[in-house]
Length: 167
Image (cartoon, rainbow, N blue to C red; front, side, top):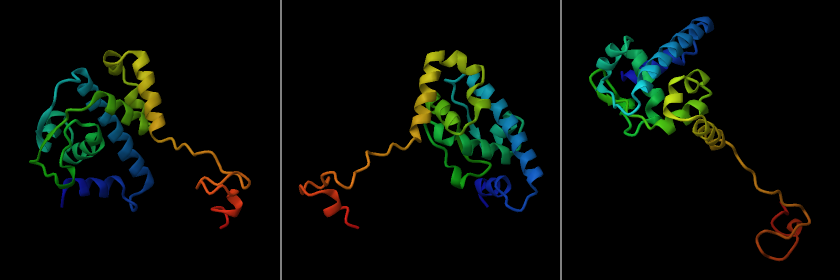
C-alpha cells in the first residue's frame, strides 16, 4: 500500500474515536510547525532526500513525514510524486515562498503563517498583500443580476422576461 494511502486512512479515519483523532491532529500540527520553523530559517535551501531520510532528519515517523509532504506539495516548485511514494522515493522540499504563505493562509493555519521566521523573509506590507491575495483566491464574485424587465443579454432587443428568462 502506498504511504499516502496509509496516511489518509489514519488521519481521516471515520472509525477512530474523536478524542484520539483530535490528539493525533494536535500532535501533527506541533510537529508540522517545528519542521516549518527549520525550513524557514534557510528558505532558499532545497532540502532533498528519501522520505525515510527526511523523517529521520526531522525526528518523526515516515507516516508523519508523508502527511507533511502531502501538505506542502502544492507549494513546491517541483512537485513530489506523493500518490505512489514509498520510503525510498527521492523527494524535495524546495518551496515557493509566496505560494507557501498563501497556502498557509488559505488553510487557515495561523500557527504557520504567523511564525516569526516570515518576518525575515517578507516585510509586513508584503505579508499583508499576500494575505489579501490568498483570501481573494477563493472568493466568488457574482455578476449583476438581470431584472425581469431589463433588455435580454442575448442581444435580441426583447425584455428578458419575454426572451431567455421565460423558463
